[in-house]
Image (cartoon, rainbow, N blue to C red; front, side):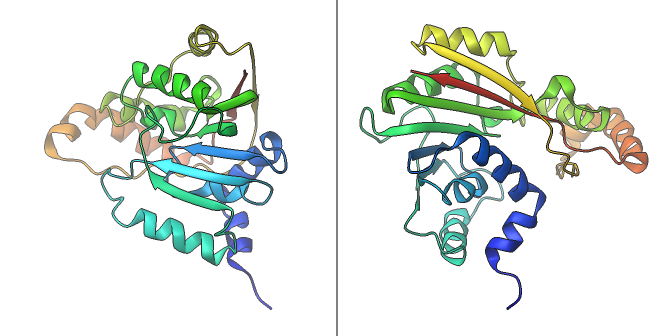
Length: 237
C-alpha cells in the first residue's frame, strides 16, 4: 500500500518528538487548546486521542499560506473533524471561560515578545480552563543542551528573534500567583537529531554575531549532537 501521510509525519524527527509529548501529556477524549501551534505538529499528534483547537498569529516572516497548509495537512492525515485552527493572540483568547481541559504551549513561548506576554498567557489559560484543568508548557531544556544548540540559541536571543527563556522557578512563581494550585516539572530525552535553525542575515545583524556564527559553524562541522532534552512544566487548577 505504501506510506501514508501519517506514517511520514510520525517518522519525521519533529513528528516523533510531538508524539512523545502528546503520549505523555494528553488524555483520551479531552478538549485541547494548542497555543502558538505553528505548522500544527503538536495539534496533529494530539488529534489521535483528543479534539484540538489551534491558535497562532501566523503573521511572521515566511509564514504566508500556513493556515492553508495547516488545513490541507489535517485533511491528508484524515483528522479534519478533530482539529480546527484560527488566527488569535496568546494573550487574548476568543473563547469562553472554562472551555478547555488542557491548554498547551509546545516550543512556542520562546517566540513571545516579552515576559509580560508569558504572564498574560498564563492568565488567559486559567480563564479558559475548566476546574481541574491543566496548563502544559514545553520547551527545550536549555540548561542541559549541548554546545551546538546553546551556540545557536545564544545567537537567536542576541538578535531578539527569540525570548530568553525565564528560569523555571520564575515560571512556577508566576503560575502560583495566577492561582494554579499545583505545579510539577520534568525533563526527558528525545534522542533526535538536531537541525540548526536557518539564519537569514542582513548586514547589520550579521555584524553583531559574525564571530559567534563562525564558531557555531565550526561546531556544526564536527558535531553529531542531538536535540536537547525536552522540559515539561504542568500546572493544575
